[in-house]
Length: 380
Image 1 (cartoon, rainbow, N blue to C red):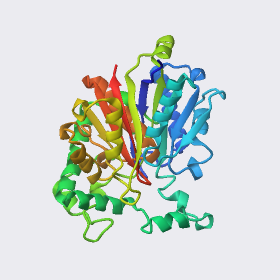
Image 2: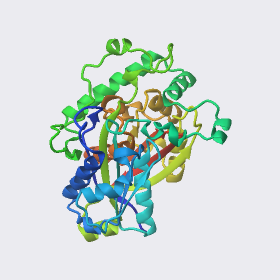
Image 3: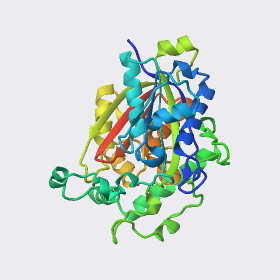
Image 4: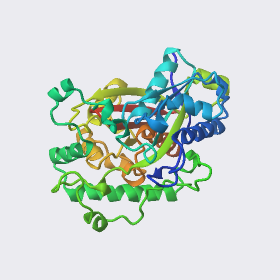
């Protein structure tokens, strides 16, 4: 029976909005990561059957199928095709799922999955900016959901539903910075970085060392005047990209590649599109049920820190050990480059599992429209 294994996983250091990558075109950002994956694994790009690339704002500099453009910009043979995926924040995690399905089914033997987002060059909401092309919510959708979905308001709803205070959320945000600082200082990310020429960026740029409860207490709520969500306990707006090389165990042996982890189980779930951010809870339940594993058998979790209430609510509902939840920090500390985040989180998870001998890891992230992907990896 065919399986799906990851034999390479790389990412850029994440750049702040208007930071190190402000003048790097997202196609170039993607191309450098693809080149880095080739250099890391030694794969001949000619054997790659497809490039599946996540990207959320597919307009302007991210239009015209960034997957194909990035592969060509990276110098891949013209015979290597590419397709672009939008499952909102989970776009490049979905790319991994599609890649795994392609190799398990025998449609492909070698696939690159990943994604990109330049939130500097193509700002969030850019695809909705021109009213001449109409609003994304048609009359029938608006009839069913008269309250237009807003992620920040959804975060406030999650905090209220689970009873999280601002101090609890801020404590989590401080922990994210502290864990990220410790991971960077320990060199946890060094082997996975692809440095982008001319930028000088060698580590994730968003980290604010010394972030404290006192500092966060001075920030104003962003979505409600009496709310608990603010810039300091939300993910940062960022630029970045990541890529993974996926094949079968048999093909890896043929190509002389060493499998790092097996894609053990993957699932996707829908949830309330107005509160929007609770999808990782049912997605995790679905993945665990399919895998036959219990939450206590998972040694590391990457649950995207879109807003602090998201991983906290997930932890309450799943009963996961808090020490294994985002042990290397997360998007509150380093940023969330939308279409690139799924691949970036998975790259972090793969290397964390390999470096620390963790048998099983699970990744999930909330997605616009009320959805979530969940992926369980098994160490090889």
